[in-house]
Image (cartoon, rainbow, N blue to C red; front, side, top):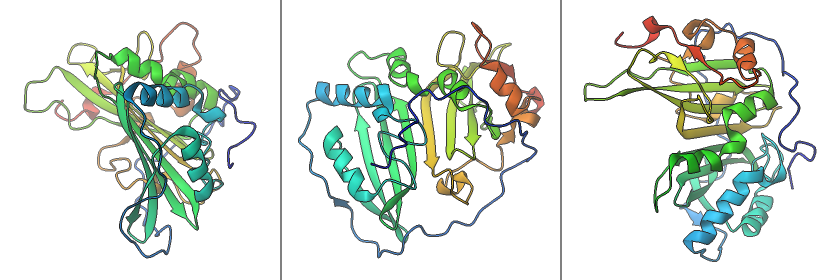
Length: 297
């Protein structure tokens, strides 16, 4: 089915490499259309029985708890560069997921939207030659029926930074996007986006960290568990490890080039040192950003 058979979660804790990024900003790439089909109207090509809210909630939580039995860059049994469109349709029936297909320039993409009382999110699958080229997964905390932020973090525990980073090894590149600093409107927090890239694995992780505007405003702890300040937003971009283009090519929003800062410059640590923070027993992975890099300070 296009799923990597021996990549059960979690993989070994062997670091991917010890290479340190020396880039200052991501270069700009010109995207090439992924397919040559003539765009047409949106098409729903899989009809799934409507689930009641509790069934839908249990369905999504079950998929997240084991990731369909495979490890990244496989997602719910779908592996970029391997899984075909027909296999995705088969999986959608198996997992009770409604698929919608939309034109995207000269290519097409398949979408799955979900909302289960804890979160709302989407999965976009870009196609090339009738197979999956890339996947973009997004989810955010969406409280309903008394759900709490801890419910969201528990649902995504398999993909928490403290689980994935030790399993995947040393990232090839890490960027920090400090945003635009506190807004003019009254606010009590400062938000960062942490981009963690594994170029040779076809994986990009994005976690959001929120700091109170206090003496610890520069302290960044990308952890879901105790002592962490990773928040209610998770984004995962997956592509084939053998793809010859940089993984960020598949995300037109991408890393905000005008403000994303390599971690070496933003915090004075290397990707290897970042990785080692997660290997300390009983301690959250924390580091300090450099204050002069934050807008408005």
